[in-house]
Each structure stands twice: as C-alpha cells, then as structure tokens.
Image 1 (spheres, rainbow, N blue to C red):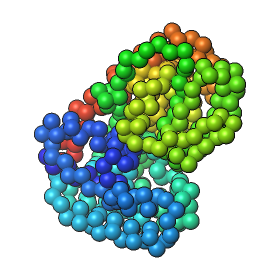
Image 2: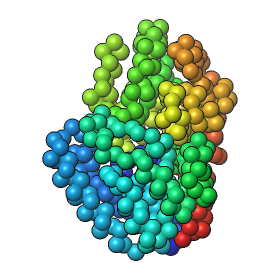
Image 3: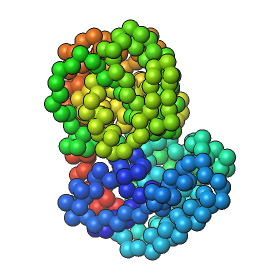
Image 4: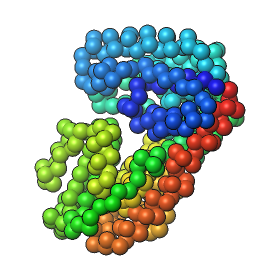
Length: 354
C-alpha cells in the first residue's frame, strides 16, 4: 500500500509531523507500506515564511510552495495522509483534490479549528482560514485525533474518528546512565510560539533559584532570542541532536500551560518526552495532562504558583522521589504513549482506509 503524506513542512522540522507521522515511518515501511513524503515548504522557505521577512519574500515562498503542492497531488497513492492541513493558505482545495485521487486520512493534534497565529505572521492572519478544518474533517474517510477533546469536536463532522495519541519513540527517547550529582537540572524544551506558556512560571523559578542557589540549574530550549535577566537564563537553539542531549541532562521536566480552549486540545508532548527520558515531570492539570499524570504516582500536577513552588521543591529536595516518579513516568509512556505501542494500530487504520 502506498501512502502519500501531505504536510506543510519537510522532514524533521514540524513537531506535529515528526511525532505523529515521521516517527511511525520505519514501522510502516517494515509492515510493507510505501511512503511518499511531500512537504509544501522546504527548510529555507519555512524559515522565511515563519520569520519576519518582507511580504514580497513571503509571497515568493507561497508561490513556490503552491507549485510543490500541486505537483504532489498528481502522485499515485492508495491513501493520502493529511497532517493538520495540506496547504497553509486558503481553503480546503488541496484536500479536495487529494480525495479525488485516494481516500484521505486527516490527522490533527491541536484545536486547529480555533484562530491562532504566530506573532511573526499576525499581520497575515486574515489569510489563515480555520473554517476549512471542518470541511477537511467532513471530507476525510478517516479522522485521527490526538486526544478525546479533539475527537469530541471531530465527531460533530465525521462518523469515522479514532483517537491516536501523540506518541514518543521510546527506543530513541530513553534514559541514560548518569552519575549522582548534587546539582539538580530542571528544564523545558519548546518552540518560539510556546514560550508564552513558560513565561508565567518564571517568577516561581526565580523563587526556587533564590532558595536553592547553585544546587539548581535551569535550561530552556527552542528560542535563542529568549533571555531572562533575573535568572541569567538564555534560550538555546533547537535541533534534534541538541534537544536529545538536553533531555539526557534533565532531572526534572516541566510542562506549564494556561487553561483555555486552545491548550485543552494539547496532547501533552513536552511532558511525555521528559517522562520517556526518566525525568520526574510536573505538568499543569489542563486537558489530557490529567490523563497522562496520576499525581504522586508517575508525575506531579501543579496549577497555582504556590503549587508549582511546592511540587518542584519536593523534587529538588528528594532524589528518591525523583527517581521513583521518573521510572514510573517512563513506564507510562512505554505502555500507553509509545510509537511501538501504537504503530500496529496506525497501520491497521491505514489499511482499512485504503
């Protein structure tokens, strides 16, 4: 069976595409599938389009991407896998053309029916058509939603909805042996668009740093332009290799979130990745996070500043607690949220669609 993958980005760039399809690709190939991967933006064009380039430069990028997408829609396929959207401007035209060639699997892992744009492209927000998401879901043969909240929305528009959680490759994201150290490393890895979720936690981190001094090391990754003078904290540039190296250093991983309609659709990825690495993980009790974490058993939940301060202090003070929660968190990911656990399910759904 030949699967044509349609996504906005090329390989290795988009977290959604990396975790919800690219991580499964070796398993699909092993199961006898052929995969034709077609991103609309190459890496250079993606940097221009997501940055603060002039409108003319972004327009040239959009035209090149349009040409790539139109060319990809002529390719042979038994099933078309659309991750979030096949093209980033306009309506559901590309998904419509795709479904004329083969049954479509529509996969999404955020509340993308809501209007959300990056700061860099806010002046172009009028070009983003979120109304098309409903039409894509209605036209798709199969809809894959990252959690129950997203699936509930999708079931208003489709009778063929399945929950496939965002998964972690637990062979790649695995604990490594580390010497016992007095310094406890607490970290967060995200993207420039999600740094707004970390910022409300900074006052808590300032209080922790004042309390523990050099016993506490802080790391944040995803936006090298980020800095926070009171903590002497600077963001580190993201790459796959750098992220994995950072995660191997973490004793504590954090996933703070505000509670709103958008974040309730989140799939808990930051927490799942740190749990997979064996780090003790603290998450906001928002959306699927309360399904992933059983408080005190495989991680901790914290809502208010005082709760964050209390739970993080407990972990800094208690190495045995960190170890116990880290081991239990790892086991949770292996059993319930791993690529290895869900690859057969995804393969079965693709075969049923094609």
